[in-house]
Length: 302
Image (cartoon, rainbow, N blue to C red; front, side):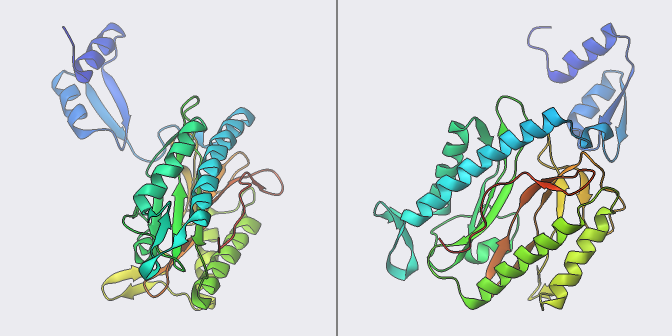
């Protein structure tokens, strides 16, 4: 067959190997699965971790993740450098070289730096003000002085395929007392998580501890005017060849952290009155103290 589709090529390969049944991950494309079934293959979907052994990283894999994390840190450094050089224009809009500094422009600066460092930037987040109240918002439009900006960088190494992650929240200018307190609370929450990242600790317990700490500081998670506010996502997740892998550190997760897990710890608080604040570092679980693989500083004002 000239220029066969993926389904036909897969079916022919399976026929050569005398394979009649395929087990595929939960996220497998539905259309491709239907085509393969029409071509006579049996498809079984496996929920959960498709390669559970991949959650434990070797020393070589940790080095590759650390290298990808370095690419993320290069992008963050370039992004913050651009913010520092920006001037404050009318209506608090930031200007770079006399032109508005937008989320799109700052994202391009970051992504270019990641590319030059050997990585491929994936869904870089530059969300300012109220936009940052949605953890999945990439950000758009003009950036403002004296307002928090959440920057999240998730590169994949073009050479190895391994991922890195980092997130910082910064203010160009002066942060309000409310934003400063929110930032300090997230920073302390991340520190609490770090103290609990130990071999054989249940992942869900770490998330519950952060929820409890945030409530004790007056930061409750609730619905406000029809939208959720507060601590809106899990404490973290593993990473490696995927940007999100096992283990998951979220509410009720029974997974035990084990030596060799590499996890991104990303607590955040999101309120429309102040904006979003998120910090993310990558940590290796060891037999003793956890090892923070992230070297980049955490500074609120730039």
